[in-house]
Image 1 (cartoon, rainbow, N blue to C red):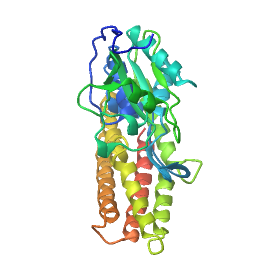
Image 2 (image 1 turned 45 degrees about the horizontal axis):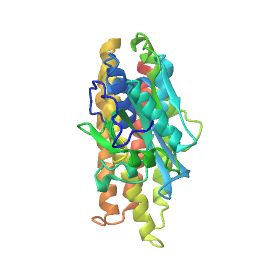
Image 3 (image 1 turned 90 degrees about the horizontal axis):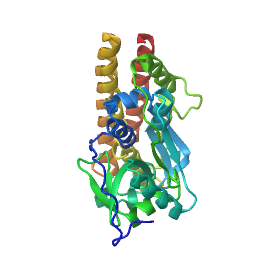
Length: 340
């Protein structure tokens, strides 16, 4: 039976909320922590080899090309499920009513449930942060009346979300449509030891960045975006050019931790791996990647000024910064690959 204002829901279980840098890595980290597995968000991100870059013109977000700074949605979840042999079950639904019924059923069983949905329809997001991005992850750990109790890892505290809004977020259409996706642990967790998997995870991430089979992925994709920026029709269509440049900034800085933030997160993973593997070279490389992250932030600053009309339309500057970042990341991952 669906929860209503007149139908009392079960008392929610004890739940520890942990704020994280990114939604997907934060959700799986929180799920594990609430099952007694104190893995860090950085370790979850690094073990899943999630650091990446992609410029995919054929996939549109708000009528502009998809630009990603990590692997595709669900990569972290599925990667950790495979590597750590987690009993993580995924379910999607054709009918929204069935999706809500199943969510309520799992909550009634005392489970904490992960969901994918659209940022645009989540009312606890500030208005200026709501836009059509359909791959945001959050946790629901209980319900009271017609509200769901939400632990969104990118916020500092737990919150509530009305059932109607959560339904719209879960069953929105368009690019990366979630189809009501929910996921949860359906069995007790096995013993988790990430150490034997660290070297292989690092090598895989190096190959993602260095040897992607398509030119719009990895380090090659960064350079490709730089060339595309240089060809923007700044004189014929200045409004489209400003939108495109602003879109790069939004995809970099407002989707999860963004381009720079994902580099910082992976650098923190390398620091942990350096201690666990007794490889001090990884500690040095973590500092190098942090510096690259700082340069991504500088690129975002320059692009934001241009998109807001606070600086001249200097597309050559943005091109040069992107090509330089491509070269530095290529050199970094080559060195990292040799280190492991």
